[in-house]
Length: 288
Ligand code: NAP
Image (cartoon, rainbow, N blue to C red):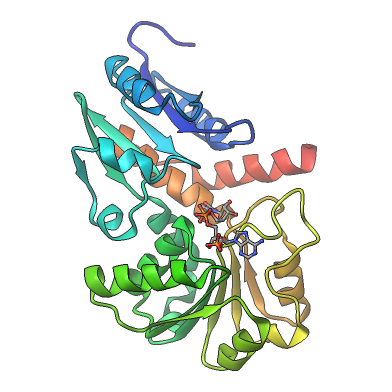
């Protein structure tokens, strides 16, 4: 239920029909007995400026930002976290009396996901597939929280990877990124120098569940860790191939709930029900 005192939260993006954020945030609000409400706020391209001003007038306390507005929102911020300055993408906004502050809580989602592999990742080489917004959050987290020594970055559009490399060199003084065209032979060449392979492309996501960003059996080795940011399906073709060799496979569920938990804390100051949220999403996939 809501009343005149209900604090408003939400997610902006387009389209939003499949977003699972309202489900887990409203569950957390209910569980903690807070007078908040989290709504999907679909904004059609072309209406962005008016909509953001409208949200400020409505005194929304905060909102998540998803595709295609993670970069566009930066022009409306009064302040931003260090993560946003480096990554150039926002997934969470806090509204402080009309002043919008931008954060990227995907970085925390990645940190909590990979924490248990911390020792193995320290001073290791990493293969990252894809160079979009999520890739930048992965690379930031790996450099800042896991002290990795080298990143091999593969992207369909190599120019985008080169741009990313320039950003990290300039803003974090991290010079150990090598960029390549997306090519399985070249991935095979560097695999022995990497501990972790991360898929940050949407390849393999529902409904294209039979696809995988890499396919050759030589690219899947028992002594590597494979992390797919996708959580729908929970076990992608990429992870199935990895697990068949006995390697560790991690999906994007913990990252998704981890970023939500950090956003929730920024808005409410409260702890998020992590396990319950993960279970809610798992059950949702089983039911649908
Ligand atoms: P994005 O900014 O659009 O970047 C997508 C990247 O994937 C680009 O580098 C793109 O290459 C590459 N790509 C797209 N289609 C490809 C294909 N068919 N073959 C090879 N490469 C391809 O998207 P994003 O925001 O980074 O999101 C990427 C993925 O991460 C999505 O699946 C998203 O659901 C997932 N994600 C998960 C979480 C989580 O909490 N678990 C959070 C954020 C994102 P080009 O540069 O050549 O276009």
